[in-house]
Image (cartoon, rainbow, N blue to C red):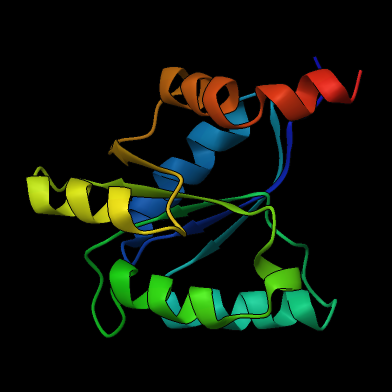
Length: 142
């Protein structure tokens, strides 16, 4: 099977979590390029570089909610303000340890959020992400 996700952006303030998530994504055969940043602000800078064509546009963003300085919700507000050519086609999945039902409900209401899953990432979770969010594009590329 070919790659379904050309580029994924992992956004988490915890270095160990980013390292773990990067390792899991690397082991999955549907992912190609993996980039990590440790803050919402750094993710916005990365996306600015996408607009300037100095960074690869992610197909998928895994976003932590609870981060200092700019949390996931604040990132999503700024993400929605970005040029649509930059954000179009990017799937945003909240990846959190939060079991707060308010977070899940807020994610459902937010038009920028495509899914909410609980940490930690696993190969099975990645299989589900591919099936749910990328299987149609995989079929259409055959």
